[in-house]
Amino acid sequence: MKTEFAQQFEALLEKYSELLVGDSSEDIKEKVQTWAIYSHIGKSMPALIQHWSSLYPEAREEMKQIIQEIKQLNEQHRQSTKK
Image (tube, rainbow, N blue to C red):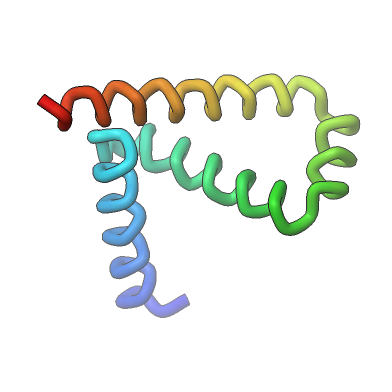
């Protein structure tokens, strides 16, 4: 990948994380990216997610925790921006 594109895509991910959960730290960006890719795969190839989940139940549990954290952060962010 070209570095200019990689930088521009990183800026997109940073802004998405900021708008979604109000935080664009490296840890949160990584979780948001993981969540977004997992969600897309789940919608476009649900059988693949089922297969992956059966192969890696520990990873599935970790993914559930990431999803829950993103949802919670999003809700907190939405509540704080309503005021």
